[in-house]
Amino acid sequence: MEDHLKDFMHYLIVEKGLAQNTIMAYERDLKSYLHYLKNVESVLSINEVKRVHIVQFLVFLKDQGKSSKTVARHIASVRSFHQFLLRDKATDQDPSVQIDTPRLERALPKVLSLQEVEILLDAPMPPDHFGIRDKAMLELLYASGIRVSELIGLDIENVHVTMGFVRCFGKGNKERIIPIGRTATDAITQFLDKGRPQFVSKKHRDPALFLNHQGKRLTRQGFWKILKKLAKSAGIEKELTPHILRHSFATHLLENGADLRAVQEMLGHADISTTQIYTNATKTKLKDVYSKYHPRA
Image 1 (cartoon, rainbow, N blue to C red):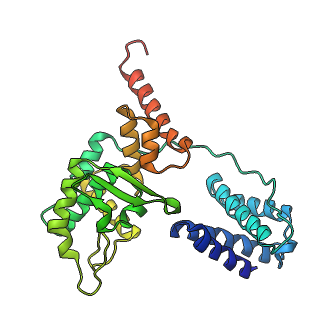
Image 2 (cartoon, one colour; image 1 turned 180 degrees about the vertical axis):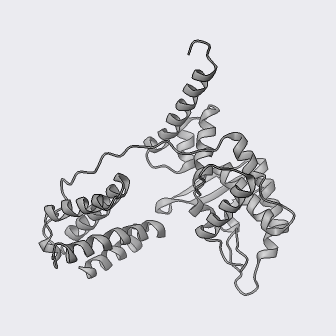
Image 3 (tube, rainbow, N blue to C red; image 1 turned 30 degrees about the vertical axis):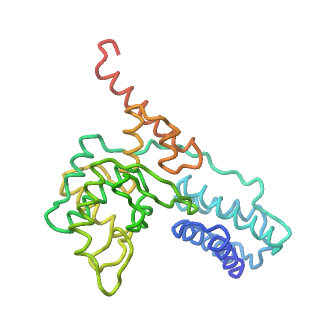
């Protein structure tokens, strides 16, 4: 069955063109699925897989304490895998048909207040090239709402400071153009003039916009360490994730009257229902304000 998994991964990379993180998630899910089939259910051939085996696998995940979101992701991976095998004529059956996906509770995104955003954006110390870089990254994230994976994937040519926009490639390698304000363009300009040249390595000559101390493209892990360090120095006690500036960007836009469709386009959401969760967050805030300040609330 491992050969079938290799064929499926090749399909995701070559034909679907999915992002590296998405491909890795599929691979992790399916490796655990095939391991379960082989070692728990003693299923050695893909043609032996029955619906009950998949159901038992999901029960196994639940017993391990996996969240509904994680179980739903495994279901999606298993379903895509079996559909691929059926189309590829590696099997004549799809046992994943009519497997129910657990109902997900959509938690409101965690966001920073405007004051907390200001404190975080002022946390980097600009005098040295590390501070100038970190300032530019945070300003760009909050100005555009791009994902961290999109941020570190930017090349110098993707940012147009004179025109005031950034060109990035999101999930499924879909391109989008996002406007950025004067504050972000000023921070990026300063970084390009005074910060980035200090990172450039004659050995690597990496086209990436944001580099690490070795002159190579900054990684997600590298950015995560920087964010935690800056949050600590800023005295922000909220649990910060690399996505929090993206959530704050969307929420603050909607709170100030931005059009939902425009925010959807800037975030790169394929379905507007994904963007609507931010309107729920703004409604919750309005209720809190009402309850706190209305004399007869």
